[in-house]
Length: 277
Image (tube, rainbow, N blue to C red; front, side, top):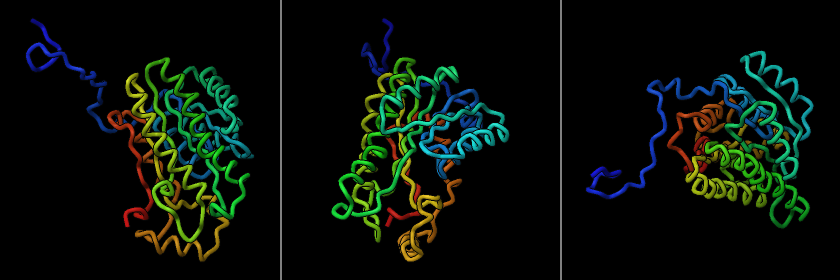
């Protein structure tokens, strides 16, 4: 009698393995795939876009207020020969997110990866910030992340495949000092758990979800921080520095590619050792 298991006539629930490249270099290729990157014109987002474009991906850059997005997209196309397009989207507005996802699918003919990267900082502690500031940070950093995952996820579920990557933060793992930012910390912790929860839900139809938790990165967001604050950060970071945003490209490429085909529900901390202490 034929069986689907390894023990008599027991039927296995084991899922089939996907095709796997023997070449590790080929497994990192993204040729022909379409990737949305929210906050794609910012320091981290733009470098993610360049890294994935270098691997062959076509890139949809979402931005909220940047004046450089079109120029950046043109540079990516020139440097890597991939298709790029820009979309002005307020991620805290679900109707805009859903419409923009549909437009990307129409413009590119497919959607393979959603990178929910857009985020804004909070500048005060839980009692010192206003309720309006709490609402603003939550709307972009948490609601916006969910909205992007939901809109893309509906496309992914219909096609039986898809990949979502959240930009969380080491602040979702630790309460930063000396700055106080309870709202931001709470939202990023929520994003990490949202990622894990969606990973379990999406696995049954072939979707994957992971998050990246960067530490202190040398971008415009941290550019106006006082010298003394940055020195305190460096003192608490074992590597004694912040990161160049280009140092994040590798982890996003891994998660976006087939090299990570057995990786889901994971959070990758890239923080110079800050949370390892």
